[in-house]
Image: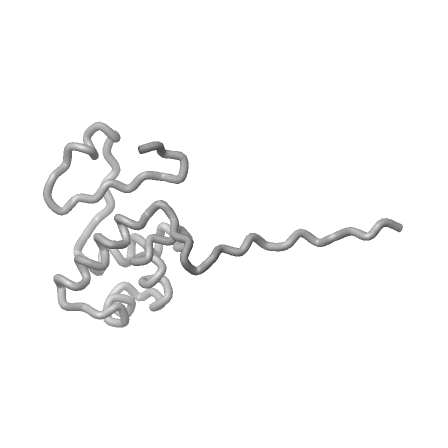
Length: 103
């Protein structure tokens, strides 16, 4: 009988971040402008503190539902526009690119 090795889960280092670093920084800046702590934002959004920290760190492990709750608590909404339009928006907008996007 051959020995079968169980596949190991992929471990992400604590310093590895997803493609959402700019988005996370945008959320953290908005939170600070509103005078909120991460704990207060988590409470307002009815999500866990770790979810707020994960979003602000730009890691891609939260669900869309959690992200939408946090956006709502910050008085923001998610807007999907064609890429050409997203690059020309001004003000307090942030462009978020997916995993397969090229710069």
